Image (cartoon, rainbow, N blue to C red):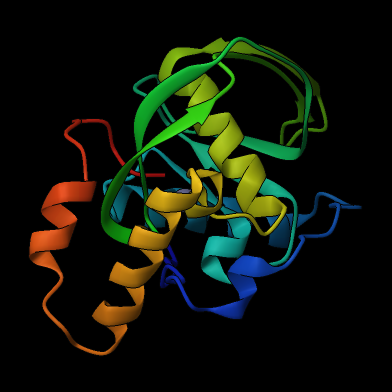
Length: 181
Ligand code: ZN
């Protein structure tokens, strides 16, 4: 099964808004299978199509119950607020405390065209929101408070220059054992 390179911070594809899927065909199924394989290889819990360079609105996830695919997802309701550490496969090594709604209701479609209507909280609710953000060209650093965002952007910039950012990362990065998405 084909697997993909995961696009990293700085790749312009991560900043673009992905397009609605108009047709589920063999190519889309193969893409979803390749995304699942890529997610497992990277030991992630979720992966959105733009992270493998494809501008389509779909993502895959597995929070321990097997792989799932959501096509044309939409958050129809969000509720509450929850500060929790989050990691991104496109921002390796940065596990950051991000505030997001605690509970979400997601609509979408599976690969057979069946409508999905999913309530999620805890880690799964967060995965859904993180992947939706990827489809809208938003990275988790943009969800940080301004100070923390500046620090994170400084680390990423200096990393790209080959500088040692470990001391600053140790101050910013928080603990957690959930897989990146
Ligand atoms: Zn991500």
